[in-house]
Image 1 (cartoon, rainbow, N blue to C red):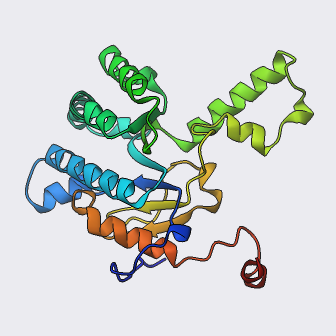
Image 2 (image 1 turned 90 degrees about the horizontal axis):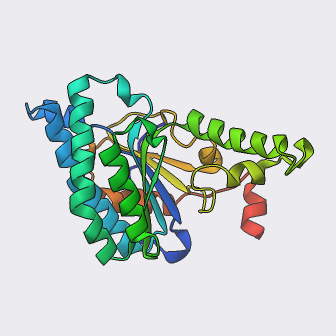
Length: 253
């Protein structure tokens, strides 16, 4: 699949905007290597890209933005890089949460928190509590998250409901599983963006991406700012989403 190349000046109409955008933020290390910097420099620079993308989503009226910050597989990276990422995550929580709250942005963190230290878990909880009633944008951070884990934890919850007699096995359906997935109460992702030229979803939101449009950018994440985000939204506006139907059925609707 080739990367979308579009005119960023084409306006994104209200009817063609995604409600929920998910982003796999890739290329921090390669960005740093290209500039002959330490790998952590790329992750630090990536924070500016997060700010830019959040600003663009707010301006465009996007309801939910989900960022894949740290996967369940990322623990396999060098220990010094993982340690630096954890410190950066904590610093970001300490510095940015009040700004998010001031701008009416709700922070939601999904993933298995059990591997994070107590201090980080405490700041995650406080950040979510502080912003819980905000309505301008749902900013979701996926940390120690994996699509397999998400499906597993949802099925465990449903199995417990059957075991307790709350429901019968015959009551299990897609809607019930969906409600027990992370973000089960929010709209499914309409658009998934991956930066840095890689064309895979890397165990991210496997259940939720059933009908998600995919957009691959060659740009490294630290350089993915306002203009690049608008290019992705414009590309999405040109797509025709069928959900299993034919062109004729869509055109008649």
